Amino acid sequence: MPRKSTRLTFAVLATGAGVFAMLQSLIAPALPTVQHALHTSQSTATWVMTAYLLSASIFTPILGRVGDLIGKKRTLVVVLVTVAVGCLLAALAPSIGVLILARVVQGVGGALLPLSFGIIRDEFAASEVSGSISNLSAVIAAGGGVGMVAAGPIVTALDFRWLFWIPVAVVVAVTLIAVRYVPESPNRAQGQVNWLGAALLSAWLVALLLPLSQASVWGWGSARVLGLFAVAVVLFALWLYAEARSRTPLIDLRVMRLPAVWTTNTAAFLFGAGMYAIWSFLPGFVQTPSSAGYGFGASVTAAGLLMLPMLVAMFLSGVLTGRLEPVLGAKTLLTAGAALGALACGFLALWHAEQWQIALVAGLFGLGIGLAFSSMANLIVGSVPADQTGAATGMNANIRTIGGSIGAAVTSVLVTGRLQPSGLPYASGYTHGFALLAVLCLAAALAALLVPVRRTGGGHNGTARATSEAPGARQQAVAPGARG
Image (cartoon, rainbow, N blue to C red; front, side):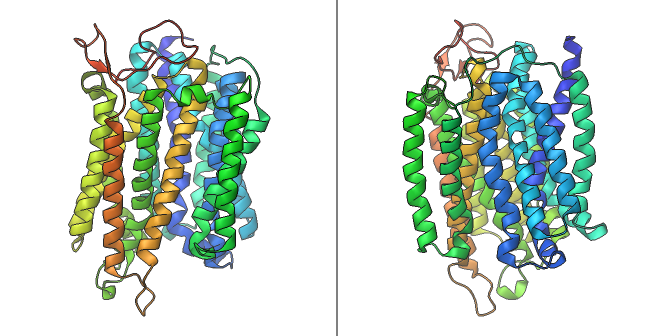
């Protein structure tokens, strides 16, 4: 494969991963429209989001591992085809049940993230890996922002079904290019898929995420919520036991215990809690009628435009990370990103009476997201053996999602715990919620400070690099792309 073709490979990976990230947030502002168009209840419509979350959580680490075993390109193409089918099914869905099924199919696209990181590590020159991962992470982060900004205009000008018709066209084109131009990775893990581990992983993720996403409907003290939490604990323990005893584990727990991996995952969990909650509640805040004592009564489109600074900032800072990381180190950038998130949420808790304040906070938080996303990926990729890249980055994405689900659920309790006679939350609910998110992001920054740093000679005058020798890694001081 000629080295010049890496640009086309990157374009394919970035487009696919960006579409997945966009699909994650694109439908959220349009849920009331979907509810009305498909004649369903609000609680049923929320399953359009929940189904996608659960599916992506299950398939991201499993198919990341499958790619490590049978080939990342082959798995990538299958995943892209599946996403295209899911989007087509959603665009044609005659009922809410079919739309929910389509979202389950689309969730398979979560595997695009670990597969893309793995292909970059395998195919790009060592000097290109870190910057390419940072740029891809910036695209993934920005994809979520594009979804929030674009949903309103698309639904207003066309119809909610075009939220899926457009991705169909894009994914089909990307799939055809991937088949022709993306090379098959030479690095393969040994063994086979541990299906028991996959089943147990899927089971405890569903048992954990389902009650988190539905607790506001079922009630936090309901038997279903408490029972599923108990089941999740038991299944998680069984999964750990099964993986520890397996000769070919789905997720190598030795890799998860590496200092650079578990500290980065801890930061990902905490920062994810703050990030996803901001994405979930800030648009709702600005759409609240000013008669509630806060909010601006913004339309879906206007709310999206207020989030535009976040989209621009997260993309620019993510791309900038690739330039800064060889000099400052990924640990420093992850810490700075989480700290910016904490600063943004703290500012929002104190000042939110003017629209310019919301735009400023959105931009500041976007800077943090871009720095954090890019540096997390580089820390994980640089700390694990090449044949564990898919599984390890898949679990990192999953841990971030789990943190996001918990953060959104707890914030929902604070925001909706007390309602005005009109049915709208009190301003104090949002204030307390934003303050909690500031604490979570600050905790993420403190966790990032625990990422180990080893000073190595050479390179950028002995720049500090966060590395960790992984079991089974080749005899090398720093894995490709492990700067930071």
